[in-house]
Length: 329
Image (cartoon, rainbow, N blue to C red; front, side, top):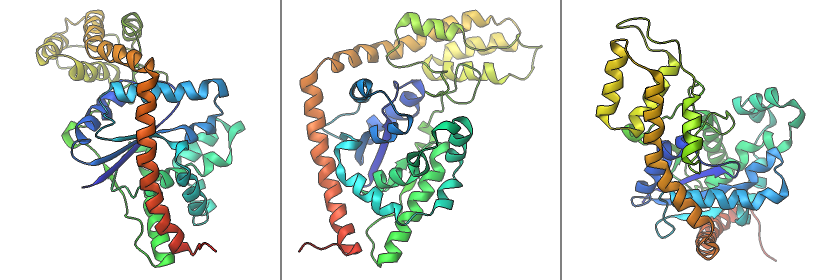
């Protein structure tokens, strides 16, 4: 059975892109593979979150994971910082990683450009910590977005480098995993190509009906079709993409016909889109709130997941320490 690992930073809420792009598929995948899902609270420290918000951020993401269909009886759900072997492997992998390799990553260059006052060592070695997350469980598959592919290549490089240096076969080279035809890329409401937390263009699973409607009605559009057969702008393409994900095919076709014949009213399309998004997300929102307030259940999930994750990581680190040459007196 293949091992799959995926994590998400404990900053903000999960949005439609997370849900339709991955979480629904994870809920199915957990029945076919050994899945580890973690909350990357150590990664979030690069942005220096407030201490008083730190735990609640983790609790929110865990509740949203569970409400989206992840089953603690089928998968291992845990918090990154609760598995100390991750940090140990992070240190060891840093010894095999070169400064120039990290400085050339596109994500690091972007962070330096966007926030030059916060170029900390954690940002530079972010891909190494990500590699430790993956390799400590010897994952075969890692679902990654386009912006994380370079990080996964560093993970593969470090796996090869470690195995070659110590003449062992401890680490498999993890492969990028996608969901094939089931993979859905959710665009942003601002006309951009991607919905994301940092872009501020998302609809979150915790949003109420009023908030969702307000966000959708403000979505960027154009001045309308120039005429029959005119090409569709990126902004309108995005709205139709969202509509195709949450609405019935007949609804999508109805508005597509209106666009083609030049009679479409974007306000009507947005109202329908907001209504259909709510049909998907409001039941999830109710479940998130129920889970968030059930401390006993959350403790059970985390206690169970932590022990499973530590057991997996301990088994890997025994092999790593033996390969490196650590011995007990």
